[in-house]
Each structure stands twice: as C-alpha cells, then as structure tokens.
Image 1 (cartoon, rainbow, N blue to C red):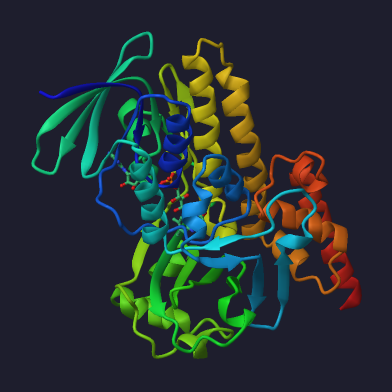
Image 2: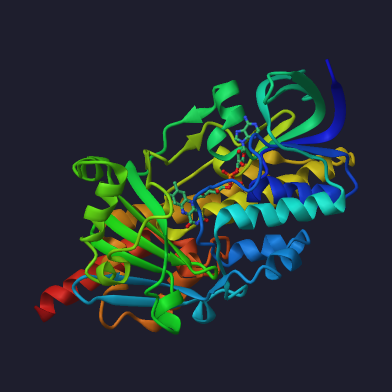
Length: 415
Ligand SMILES: Cc1cc2nc3c(=O)[nH]c(=O)nc-3n(C[C@H](O)[C@H](O)[C@H](O)COP(=O)(O)OP(=O)(O)OC[C@H]3O[C@@H](n4cnc5c(N)ncnc54)[C@H](O)[C@@H]3O)c2cc1C
C-alpha cells in the first residue's frame, strides 16, 4: 500500500482547507491536502463578510480572487413585506478593518483558490476520501485515504487540520460531535438566471427578506448574472409546504412581497436543495496532533453569513499555531485556539439566537435606530467579533437584550 509522510495533512479543500494550506506552504512545511470531490463542486455559503478578507490577504490568496471580479458586497440589507428597511453599510462600521467583501458562487470561488495553490506547488489530491485515522500518543497519525476505485493509501502526518466541512471527519471518527444550542432550522435554496435584475445597487444588493420572525429569504446576486435564493425557517414550517422541491420553492417565493415579481416565472438552475438541522458543535476544537476548523468544528446558522469567516479565522490561526509548535515552541491550545475561537463563536451565537427571538429585528427595524448602536452592530455583522472595544462585542448578550427592550417600550409608547 502506498504510504507518504508529511508535516501536516489537511482534510478538505474548501475555504478553510485552502487558507490553512496557503499559510503552511508559505512557511515551507511539507503538506498534503486530501479532498473527497473533484472541483468545481457546489457548496452553499455564498455571502461573505469582510473579516474573511484579512485571512485571504494574509495568506496570499487575495490577488487570484480579485482577478475573478466577483460581485462586491459593501453591506447587508434587511427588509420586510410591511415596508421595514434596515441597510447596513460596512463603511460605517465601528471597528477598523475591511469595509467590503464578495458575493460568490462557491464552486468558482473555491476552485480559484485550489487552482492557485496548485500553481504554487501545493499537493492537493482530489477525489480522495479520508475514511479512517489512527493516532499515536505523541499525536503522529496515520490516515487511510480511499480513491474512487476503492484503492487505499496511508498518509503519515505530525499534524492534521480537519477542514472537512459537513463531512466532519474527525468529529465523526473520534466521537467529538455535540448538539448545537442554536434553534433547529431547515433550508431550501437554488439559483436562477436573474434576467429581470433592476439596474444599479437595487439589482446587486444582498438582501435578507424577513417573512416572519423565524423565516427569511436570502437574495444573493452574483456578477455572472445568476442569483442565489434560499429560505430558512422552522423545520415544521418548511415541511408544511407540499410537493416536489421545485413546487415547494415556487410556493414559498409567493411569501416574498418584495421579490416575488423579480423572480416570478424564472426557471431554477437546479432542483432546489433542502437541508434540515444544520447547526453543529463539537466537544473539543483540538487534540494531540489535530485541530478542527471551519464547519468541521462549529456551524451556527446562515443568518449573518458567518460560516466562511469562521472557517478562515480558525484555519489561519490553527496553521500559525501548528507552525510554531513544529518549530519547537510550546503552544497553549486551550487559550490561544479554543478560547479565542469560542469568543467569536459566542458573540455571533448571541446575534443568531436574538435574531430568532425577534429582538434584533426590533432593533434593526426601529425607525430611528441610534447611529452609534448601528455602527457597533454593523462591525459585528462585518465579522469583527474579536474587537472587545466594541460594546456590542464585549457585552453582546446584555446589550442586545437591553436595547431590544428599550426599543419595544418606545414603540409601545408611540402606539
Ligand atoms: C443554508 C446555508 C447557507 C449558508 N450561507 C452562508 C453564507 O451566506 N455565508 C457564509 O459565510 N457561510 C454560509 N454558510 C456556511 C458555509 O457553507 C460554511 O461555513 C463554509 O462552506 C465552511 O467552509 P469549510 O471550508 O469549513 O467547509 P466546506 O466549504 O464545506 O469544504 C469542506 C471540504 O471537505 C471535503 N470533504 C468532506 N469530507 C471529506 C473526506 N472524508 N475526505 C476528504 N475531503 C472531505 C468536502 O468535499 C469539501 O470540499 C451557509 C450554510 C448553510 C447550511
């Protein structure tokens, strides 16, 4: 059986695996990426937030992405069928940092990065699936990889970065899965040719159309003329729509007063995909000889588009820590990795939960939302959830609840 030895094995070539690979390659480490699929492959997660740009830039992947002219995203807009509107402009956020990012068809986006890595000489084995891992006490691992003909080979590594996304390879193999405390939701989504796209900002603006407190529609226009449409809502509610995925999605589009006309009569580019109960968590983010990154570690909810940002944040940080450790330094993984990542996850998790209680919607749609509050929340929505000088980061839970309560009282007084 073929056997190779590397410093670091990376499982999965999504944004998380690519950022980790880019960093480690530039440090001169001997690495290998193993990816189950051939690229391009479809994956959901198309609206980025500015924080991830820091990571693409730092690891040298920004120029290849910029060359693709993806749709620029400068903010996020929330609307309702009753005419409520809340428009966040990342240029007006509280924290320092990027004030724009992209809306991307992920098949193209992810392949751009893996093509670039291969140009640099990074070893990426496509259509190779990790099926088993065996660790020694010192963290050295032997990973069994299977190709599409069923042939197996072994990769021996000093470290594994598990960036396998929904594959959740190490959480599955090592029994690390833990139920998430985010309310359970379902989703149905597809793409259309956006042939009735209005000119200017209205046509290209990413929008969250709030159908009711727990149900919303995303509209993510791409620079290639396609648009991504997807509903998220309670599992029972989405299940209550009958028929094929096409029929369900068409019926659900009638719920959007804002967007119905724009997308009425357009064919879906693929049969709408449905996923239930997608939030995921783990008992530990690292162990002797491995780190979990991206969706293989934690996934909250699509509502504030935090997935790719956490995927790149955790990949970049774990790659830095592994480099230091392989250079002989002692790394405190508990504080330097777990505590850091979980700080950001906990901030975002408050925003996700308070979205579904309706508290954030009260704040967003208040006609006279306070400007500095809006700027501070905008920095959170841009992904700058580690900036503790931002009161809406540092005191996230208390402040969101308090401001929602004050807003509610003001509205009751005005009624
Ligand atoms: C409905 C929905 C909407 C979302 N919308 C957004 C959004 O707008 N913005 C956002 O940022 N995020 C969004 N997300 C989250 C986003 O999809 C993920 O957070 C992001 O793709 C994670 O990147 P990753 O690199 O960790 O994993 P992935 O991009 O999933 O990549 C993992 C790779 O690992 C490979 N793999 C899996 N198993 C194996 C194996 N056994 N061996 C080898 N390779 C393997 C897979 O083939 C895959 O290519 C959304 C999620 C959902 C459910």
